[in-house]
Length: 281
Ligand code: ADP
Ligand code: MG
Image (cartoon, rainbow, N blue to C red; front, side, top):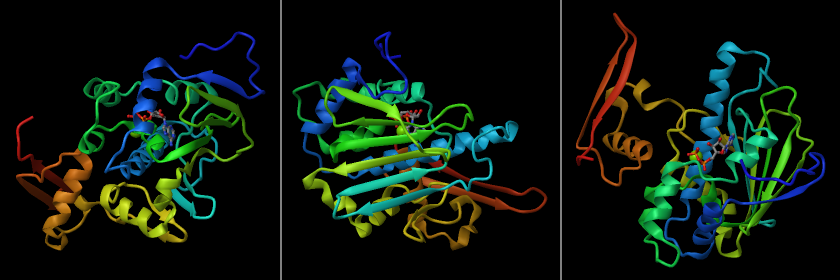
C-alpha cells in the first residue's frame, strides 16, 4: 500500500505519490525513444481480458455482483480531434484501494526485471520493451494524461477515477460510473496521434491481440478473431496462424519449432495445441 495522509477524505480528490520504483519506470518510459510503442495496447487489452476472466470465474460461485447479466466484452473508441483512445471492459473492476495499490506500485515481476535491465541513464533497445511486459505503465510511452475510471464488482463499492500525467503523483477521486468494469482513457502525445486512427488500432490488435478470448470491438465491428484457434478444424487453420498464436501468447520472438493440433469429438470432446519452442529456455 502507498502511504496516505491520515486525514484523507474519501470523497475529495486526493493526490498520492507514486512509489519510487514506479517513478523510475515512468521516467524511462516517458523519456526514451522506442520503435515498438504500439505494445501499450497489447498490455491494456491483456489487462481487460484478465479482468473479464476474473469476473467470469467469480460469478461461478457468487451472483451477488454488480451487473451479473452484463455481456463480457471490450470496446475501443478513438477520437482524432481530441487525440484520445478509450478502452472499456465489463470485467471485475477495481475498488478505490485496489486502484491505489495496483496502479501505484510495481507488483509485476517483468516490470522489475525491465528496470534491472535498463538502469536510469542507459539507452533501451526497442526489443526490450516488447519482450518484457511492462504492463499498465507502458501507456506513458504514448500518453501525456491517463484516466482510469473503475467500478468494482462488489456492490457496496462506488466507482473512482484515477488520473496521472506521468509525473510523480496521481490523483484519485469519486466517479459517477454505475456499471461494473473499467474505462482507460489515454490522451495521446502529439507524436503518438497515429493511435487515434481506427486503421492503426485495428492493425495493432490483429498483430498483438488477435487471440484474446473476449470480443474486442471498435464502432460496431468486432476486430479480433471470433473462434479460438484450438476449436477450429486443423485443416482450416493456415500454418502462419499457429506461429502468430504462439508468439502472441508467449512473447517469444521466434517461431515455434513445431506444433501438434489435437482435435476430436468422440469419445471425448478434446481440443488442444501443443507447441515446441525453437530454443531451450
Ligand atoms: P499485470 O497485468 O502483470 O498484473 P499490469 O501493470 O498490467 O500488471 O496491471 C497491474 C494491475 O492493475 C493488474 O494486476 C490488475 O490488478 C489491475 N488492472 C489493470 N487493468 C485493469 C482492468 N482493466 N480491470 C481490472 N484491473 C486492472
Ligand atoms: Mg497486465
